[in-house]
Length: 106
Image (cartoon, rainbow, N blue to C red; front, side, top):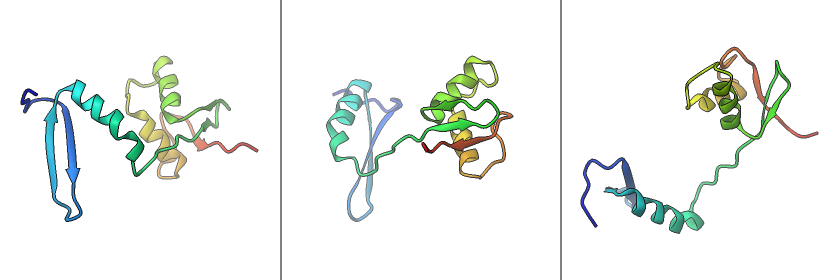
């Protein structure tokens, strides 16, 4: 393995004593370790459907809603899904001029 201090891929390991070690690795090794460790993941994020109040359109998750905003030229922010989720949680009133809510099937 080649040491790569400038790699944007990092692996952080933490023990019971809260001691943390960080390792910079190549993308191939990072992807391999990520796939290998997936069954042991302690926090699972399950995307929630979101609904745009103004259009009535329901998206599979906030990321897909953000993709729609980008395609429509409303934003260029690829992290906009965070703002949409904040709106759904009531932390913001609107995101990109739209009201959003988590959609619950009835």
